[in-house]
Amino acid sequence: MSRAKIVRAYLKAIELRKDVLGFYTDDVVQEEFPNLLAPAGATRTMADLKAANERGQNVMRSESYEIVSLVEQGDIIACEIIWTGVLAIPLRSLKPGETMRARFAVVFEFEGDRIRRQRNYDCFEPF
Image (cartoon, rainbow, N blue to C red; front, top):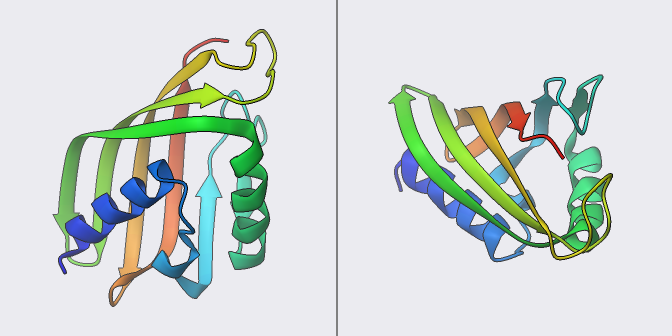
């Protein structure tokens, strides 16, 4: 499977609320650069991603990922994504059932057919 197809399958698995940890290498590092939800940014290992995956199941009712552009070069995929999420819990000024939106730029670095590094640049609409 091409790496572009793997990224599409990974995003679809998130939408379907499936376990996505199998898409990562055991030594994965995911970096989230500062944004409205993580003002200091974050760096996550596999253990952190497992915990975040479990927490996220309770925060969002649903979410969708629309790939606007995707560029593949060697072991790297860069995507521009429009994200939409429906909240299951209140968050700041939003109530359960309300929608959040963001544009993400995500850079995936692969080792074989699994994601070894992921860098997220998330730009949320005000909420």
